[in-house]
Length: 340
Image (cartoon, rainbow, N blue to C red):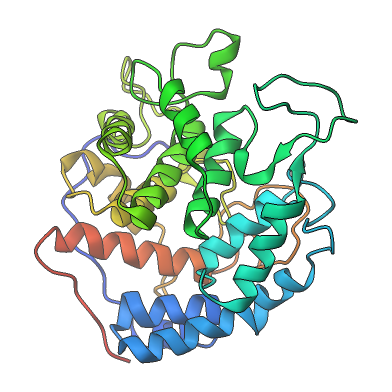
């Protein structure tokens, strides 16, 4: 059961993974191996690239690609209430680091671009009914949490998501974040929606260099999270939701503190005191063998299982935890590397 984290945690230093943990990460799927080689070991670029290329042809990545239907979709839908739709599979392939330049990625994403549509949605955001053909996948639909996930994958895989980005910029709320309930009158942002949009804007910047408008909006949204120390209400200082202290993967639209920290790390944000509590919480999850668990798996149908199951040590969470702890300890000046 999740417990309330301390208000004023001590300063922490990145723990070093031992040889057994590194080997455990390397004895895994190519999607984990190549990221461990790059982020924890500092392997030569050609070794990292060779391992990354295997994501398309072996293991989880290859299995996901093989499930794509001739109409370009997964599970016959742009989006569904499970985790096996087109949007969810592309999000997972992005997390795995499928190389956008690979023939396999270009073919799969090209089919999505040309054939998958948001059935029922017109270009002006009006719902026309299930029989209406709808807009192309990378044009998006109307909810910012969904559009954020679509834009993140689209930008990563080199697609034109400008229409989604323009909409997201218009939908930013005065407090700096986003909320899918804004159209129903909500004026306060949601951590869940905000992290989806922040990841999208970051992918846009990484893919094409961004723009002053995109960067400014992203930094305002980033400050929304930091002002709340990644998990607390600004008004009362209470933890918003104790489930956010439980480590999940994949996250899908759900927020948790490790996801927030991973975003900050990838964005190159300088660590400051406002993330210390979240860092301490993550570090405290490390078990006696030096690994982190999958504490919670969001219920829903997965196209391919990518972890050992809830309650067991998680390679994904272990990789991600080491990355953020190292980012926090290193600051802007250096990044530690370990050798096997």
